Amino acid sequence: MKLLYSSLIIFFLLLSTSLLFGQRTLPEIQVRTLEGQSVNITEHAENGKITFMTFWATWCVPCRRELDALTDIYEDWKEEFDLEIVAISIDDSRAVSRVRPMVQQNGWPFIIYTDTNQDLKNALNFQTIPQSFLIDQKGNIVYSHTGYVPGDEYELEEKIREILK
Image (cartoon, rainbow, N blue to C red; front, side):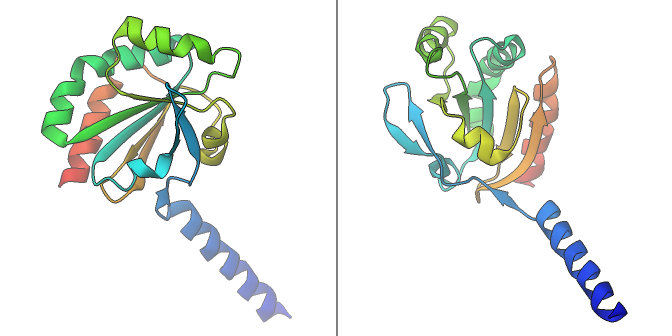
């Protein structure tokens, strides 16, 4: 009995360790373009590019600051790292009408999606925004970050360089 109990403990420890430290990939979840078209988010995991995915909302001041900072460096990163930025609004169905005007007003050049039901947010299991994920060319989530303070983009650039090594 003691051997069985010990074996079960070891099994569950190994299982939880592999789940915790294993590669995470994007789930098969549909999001919407600003034009209302449905897109499977895994398309960004299968395109062979490094993808920086950030979740934001129109009411989130740090989110808007992050997107403004990324706008300043996006063209350089796109060229140097073959990187794409995907910004996913989690505004609900009542507030989603403010997304397109805000994107246009700020000139954010990224791919913009909406996740009004927060299906993707829930599948990725986070609460606070901005929440960001760095996805390598093979579709693995290799880095995640919560919040934004000026300068976070430098840490992100280091992580991108590590992927390219």
